[in-house]
Each structure stands twice: as structure tokens, then as C-alpha cells.
Image (tube, rainbow over all chains, first blue to last red; front, side):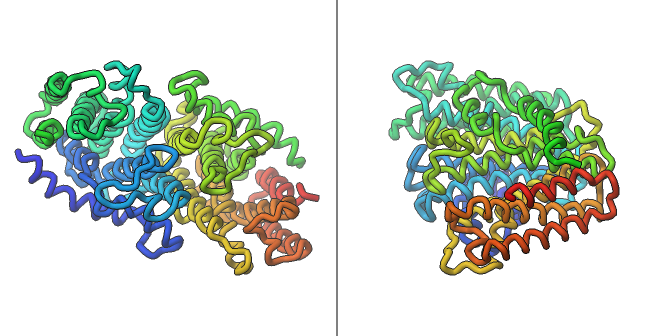
Length: 282
Length: 282
């Protein structure tokens, strides 16, 4: 299976669902709604939504059933980028080749657009795509995955520790703990929430979580290797040579694949995406 | 019925549920968790949680059933205050007699504490108080009320328009539209989400929403009258005399009470709270 082909097939579904999840362009307050869309369209790789759909397929469900989760994780990812870019955090002027939200609009609009994106994420997950045969139990269980990954013990907590990170006191454990919460938690929840909307429960979900957390870690190591020249503060390259980092990523990839070994043919997309997470930098 | 007595009876239940909804003090990242608690304990009036419990009682349910909604609306209200106080918005140094979160901690911690409070709100609503006999349908329907009230068409949108408000172009409609979204929407959702967790559906919910939106408006007018000396930018006193504002509040109170006329004795707490919302400034 070719990860890029899978990606190209799924990404348009995600974009259409994201479009449907937000108020129309021009709806008041128009400036806020434009700011919410600024980083979202055309957006980035849609890694998290595509993983949500592949998670649904891995448990034998139609990938479309994962769309409310796919939208939610992309909106949460996007809100976190908008806030991370703020002057009081990373103070970035550009992202993905365009101006950051606080530069294209202003600082208060960026804070509020992020806030509204988070709210829209839960709205999409809990009420979006009403035509799908999803049970309230499934939506709640998927939401549990996503709230756990995105709050103070997940994404937000990882960002707090990232901002306070001291490269002079870096060790493998502190770097990996930050990446586990800031990046891998939401990637793991993308897979599990998508699978839950397709009917997964119990140990199946646990295996997918273990897969997803490792793929998230692999993805982050790839980022660290790609960004080696940028001198990121919290990078595995603070404590590992590039060779050691690559070896660690290979080890995590093997572990990830091990957790979905029993899923058969249906997990081919997940396998291809895991390999892609590692190879994209080579 | 005495609103203050009702309040004193219910507020400790709310505080205990809020405490249970957040990670323990000292849990890492400890500084983030301290920042999340800063404005929350002892907190403010707990108006929204108390209204959620009164909403549950109004439809014949035990007030405790409303606790997941009560916690959610208080956490969302609190996150919105933390972000509204930021330097890029109202730039306030103090609130409720203590330093604002960005002054007591720092700006990035305040942004992230607000983000985590919003996430915790949905977590509490969707998974909190698991011992209560709430159905997944009830939790989802309650969440729908709260996401609608808190996103870009509600609370966040109201704040955007409040920041852009030009007192020289104020008219009754623009002031009331901002207050409806920034204050009344979440107060309305407090009542409806609490009632939904106690079993309310359909036209009963609609009547409670209509009650809550008006009580929210009354509450805001009270605030405008209390803050008359502070010269708030977006205040009904920009377009009304104090006497006219009081008359408008009386009219809204009458309408609010009309919507719950058919609820009988069970709605006495809602009636007392509505009257309190108006009289507290006299």
C-alpha cells in the first residue's frame, strides 16, 4: 500500500467535513470566522484526520464513520498551533509559508479564534455528521479519548513544559515526556477515536492507542531530524546523535507495527502511515 | 423562597464537584494546575452552576444530576475570564480582589490555563460524576447546549464584537446583541443543560432557554448599573438612562417569569434567582 495514494484519497473527505463543521465564510463575526479558517485551509498534512480514518478501517468500519473525530482532532491541532505561535509563546511570524494568525489579524483575534476552534472541535465530535449511524455511547467514548489527550495532562501540559524546557538540563526522559504529551497523545487519540466511531472497544482500542502513541513519537523524531538546522529547543537531537535518533525511531516503528499485527489486511493503511511517518525525512 | 439561602445550600456541592473535576494540586505540570485553579477557588458567585441545579429541580429532577453541566459552565466561564483579562484584550491586573492569572503567573501560562480549563469543561460534562444515572443521550444533548453557547456564535463571538465596540456608534441593538452572546447565551445554556441532565426535552427545554436568556440579560443590566462609574465601553448605559435600563430589566424579568409560569412549585428556585439577578444592585 502507498501512503501517499491513501492520503490523496482521504484528505478531500476531511476538507469537506472541516468546511461543514465551521460557520460559513462571511457569517458574523466575519473577522473571527476568517481567522479560524486562516491556518485550516489549505492547512497542513491532515495527518491526524487521516489516521482517524485509517483507525476506523483497521477495525473493519467505513472510514467515513471517523469523520466527526477526524474533524475534532484537526481543529484541536489547529487551535494549539494558533496559540503556540502567539507573541507570549513561540512568537512566530510565519507558519506553512503564510503569516501566523496573530500577524495576519491581531493578537486578541488569534487567542479568540483558537478558543472558538476548540469549542468547534467538541461540537463537531458530539453533533457533527448527524446522518452517520453513530451511537451516543460511541461519540462519548471518542470524546473521552480526545479530552484526555488535549487537556492539562496532554497537549496543553506538554506545551507548558516545552516553554519551560532548559536545553542545558535535557535528558532523554524529559524530551520524550514533552513530546509524548505535546505530539503523540493527540495522534494516539486520533487513531482510537476514529476506531471507536467505527465500533472498536476494549483491548482493540488499547492496541490502537499503543500503536498511535508510538507513531506520534516516530513522527516527532522525524520532525526533529528535519528541523535539525533550526535548533529547536526541545528536540531529541539535544540528547541523541542523528543516528541514535533514527535508531530510536526504527525501534518505536517496530513496536507500533507489533501492536497492530493481529489486525490483518484491514490495518494496511495504518502500517503504511507508520512507515511514512519515519521515511518522509529520508 | 430566599435566593441567598438556596445559593448557600448549593454552592458547596458545586465547589466539591469542581475540585473533583480538576487534576490534584501538585500534579504535574503543577504551575499550570495552580494557574487553572487561581480564579476558580474561591471563585465568584457560581451563578451559572446554581442556575444549572435550579434548572434540574424545575423539571422535577434531583439537583445533583446537573453537576456535570454545572461544572462545565463554570469552567467555561472561568476560562473566558482568564483570556478576557489578557494584555491583548482588557489588560486587567486584578479581578475579584486578586491578581489576574497572567499577572500572578505569566501570559503564556494564562493562555494555556484557559485552554486547559475549556478542555476540562467538556471532560467534566461528558465523563464526570460517573455514579449518576445519566444517559449518553442526556450528556450529548447537554453538551450541544454548551458548545452552541460558548463558540464563535456565542461567548467567543460576543467577546470579539465587544473588543471592537465603538461607544460612539452604540445603539440598543448592538449593545444587546453583544450581551446576548457574551453573557446571556452561557447563562441560558446553564439552565437548559442542567435541566436536560434531569430529563428535560423538547418544549420544556425551549421555555427554560427563553427564561435563561432573559435572566442573563437582566444580570448583565444589573452589572451595567453596578459598574456605572467604571465607564464600561459596552454598557446599556451608553444608550439608556439608568431609569430606562431598570425598566428594560423589569420587562425582561417579567418575560423570564412568564416562560416558567407553568412549571409550578418546582421552579421556585428559578424564580428566586431571576428576581435576585435584578435586585442585587438595589
